[in-house]
Image 1 (cartoon, helix red, strand yellow):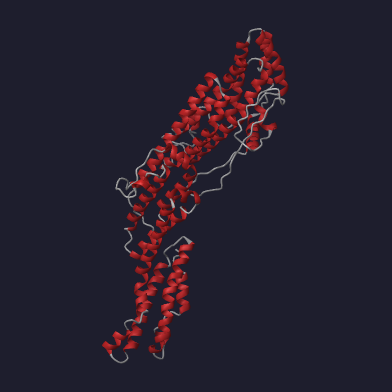
Image 2: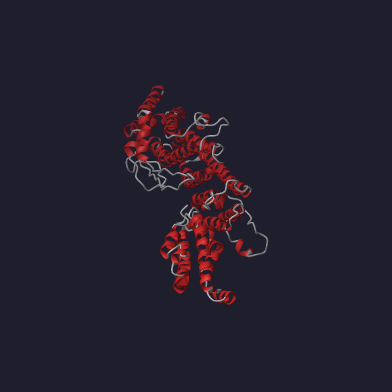
Length: 528
C-alpha cells in the first residue's frame, strides 16, 4: 500500500500539465481573451462580453459530466487543460485507486489527492491574477501613504477577479469534477471527498479575495467603485447556481455560505456608496469658479455619466438599494403613482432633482441674465441628451423626459427674450406714426436713423459678446441660430425695404450691417 501511495502521488503530480508560469498566464489570456470593460468617467468605451464553455477530458460515456452550461463560446482545449490531469494518467490513477479502496486505504489516498490538487489549483488561481495575500492586493508601489490604491489598480484587480471566477466555476471545477468521477467512480463517497479536498480551498480563497476587495479604498472618489462592485455582484449571482450544483456535502454548505456573504457584502458596499453619492452632491456648495462661457457644469457631466454607467445594473440596484424617499414624498401629489416606481427610478429622479438645484444655485453667480439662461439651457439639454438612451428613458419615464425637454424650451425662450427684445424693438415700425405726430415733417427719417443706430449698437454688442459663449450641443446650437435668423433677419429686411429711402443719399452711413452680414454673425454665435 505504501508503494501504491507513492505511485499514486507520483503519477498525479507528473500527469498534470504544468507550463512555466509566464507561458501559462500568456496562454490563458490568449485563449480566454478577457473582456476589457472600463469605467472611466471621461469616456464610455465599447464593451466586450466574455463567455466560457466546459469541456471533458474523459471519453464519452465513461463518466458523468459536470459542465455548468453557463457559456456559449468555445475554449481551446489544448491550452486550457494544461492545469488538469492527463487522460492517460487518469486511467492509471483509476486502477491504483480501485486497489487502494478495496484494501481500505481510501483515507490516505483522499488526503494525497486533495493536497496535490489543492496546491495545483491554488497555483492556477494565482496565475489567473488573483492575489492571495491581502498585503499584495494593495500594491505598495502604487498605493498612497494611507493604504488606498489607485482606481486603475482597483479596476485591474476587479477584472482579474471576475476572469478568475468565470474560469474557475465554468472550467476548472467542472473538469476537476469529471476527473474525480473518472478516477474514483467506483466509490461515490471517495469521489465527493477528493473533489471537496481539492477545490474547497481554491474556491474559498477566490471568494475571500472578492470580499477583501469590497473594503479596499481608492485614491479617487469611492463611488467610482460602484459599477465595479455591481458587476462583481451580477457575475457571482450568475455563477452561484453552478457552484451549488458542483459542490456537495459540508463543502457545499461552507462555499454557499461564503458566496452568500460575499453577495451581501458587495450589495451593502454598493448601496452605501450610491447613497453617499446622492448625499455628497446634495451638500455641494456652488462652484467658486463659474463656467465663463456658459458651458455645461462639470457636475452635470459627472452625474449623467454615473447614471449611464449604472443603468445596465438597474435590476441589481433594485435588489440591493434600500428604499429611498422622493424629495416631495408625502405631499399628497400623485402618491399612488410614486409608489409604483422602482428603487432605481426613485434614485435617478432624486439625483436629477438635486442636480437641478445645484445647477440653479450655480446659475445665480452669473450677473448677465442672458448668459444665465444659456448656462441653464446647456445643462438641461445635457440631461435630456443623456436620458435619451432607451434604457435610461425607461427608467425616467416619458413624462419626466418630456418635462426636461419643456425645461430646455423654457430656458431658450427666456434667453431669446432677454437677448433680442431690444434689437427687435428697433426693427419694429409700430412707433413711427407716433414719432411723426410728435416731431413733425421729416420725423420718419429721424426715427429711421435713430432706430438703425440703436440696432447697430445692440446687434454689435450681442455679436461681440455671445460669440464667445458656448452651446456644445450641435442641434440646440443650430436651433437657436435658426430662430434668431428667422426673427431678426426677416424684421431687418422688412424695415430696410420700407424705409431705407428715408436715410437720405448716403444710407451706408446708417446701415452698418447688410442682411448677409447679420446672417454670418448669427451663424458665428455660441462657438465658444
